[in-house]
Amino acid sequence: MESEVRGLNYLAAFLVGGLVCGLGQLFLDFTNYTPAHLLVGMVITGSLLTGVGWFQPIIDFAGAGITVPVINFGHVLTKGVLTEVEREGFLGLFAGVLEVGSAGVSASIIIGFLMAALFHPKE
Amino acid sequence: MPQINKTPNEYQKMVKNAHPSDSKVKNFISAYVIGGLICVVGEIITNILTAQGLALNEAGPLMSVSMIFIGGLLTGIGVYDEIAQYAGAGTIVPITGFANAIVSPAMEYKQDGYILGLGAKMYSVAGPVLTYGMLSAFIVGIIKLIFI
Image (cartoon, rainbow over all chains, first blue to last red; front, side, top):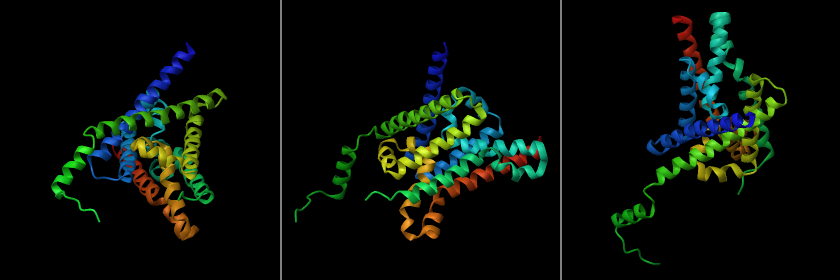
């Protein structure tokens, strides 16, 4: 039973995560925009989905299928703002941004620096 | 020097025929499969972390950090770009692709120095993503503050 549920979780993560990536590929193939535009679009989409309250239900269903794609970055930033705005009002607009997203942002910058300093580009 | 006895128009047709017309379908499928598999890796990491007794709201960020590490490392040793040739958006959209977008230009421009090269160029993609992510979160927050 336990392993059955786990198997379904993996399937949901694969199907939803794959779909997000597939939609991203269509965006790249059918427009002239760059990967940078795609990532920015993803983050804003995640932010808006969080604003209307649809993101958490998708996480409950798909797990890593939606928290691994960059779309989740928009979610954590917005979730932080919404939580802090509720708690402390106006200041939360600024103080909340990195409330939940700090681990991802800091890790990206620190690990990114270390990897780039350690390795050299392939010829 | 060998002569090419084709007009530009004929050549265009040859190129078009050589490219399979279903390449967009193929791109979609490979992005779907590889992107989906990367997400399954994230799910496996989450399961391992929660099995260690971590709460789900702690396992989430730790999974992201692990994926960023994996993406950064694979970029450093040159493997990520090999996968990206087949996967397209399948390797761009996951958070490993975000790490790739940081490490790749940073490594490339390291020769220009650690401040203006590595330090500045690592934000060439991450900068816009962070800026517009924060801006969007801010605007959603204002809407909530005013209307709700």
